[in-house]
Image (cartoon, rainbow, N blue to C red):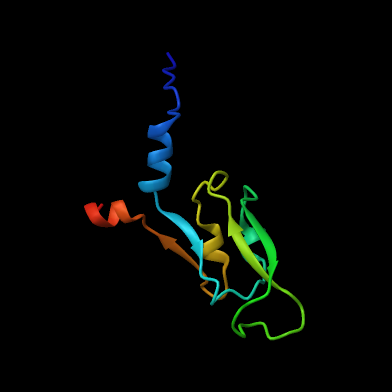
Length: 103
């Protein structure tokens, strides 16, 4: 016998995803744009965008610096990006509600 539970959609699912789950975020000041996080992501949830930094941040070359962005809708929170980052630029962010409730 196979019991199938329907997936939650709408307000409740959005609330859980946004306010009750930890997620990886990128510290731009520590990131060098090496793309190791993008290569490690199995779901291809990380895209690299060219940006011009306001401050002189590494790498100090003439090339445009790459800035990673994590798509929260595709990310499954496997944290391989955090494990593979050689500069420790990917951190785990706990939403404010979890911190407030001490979960």
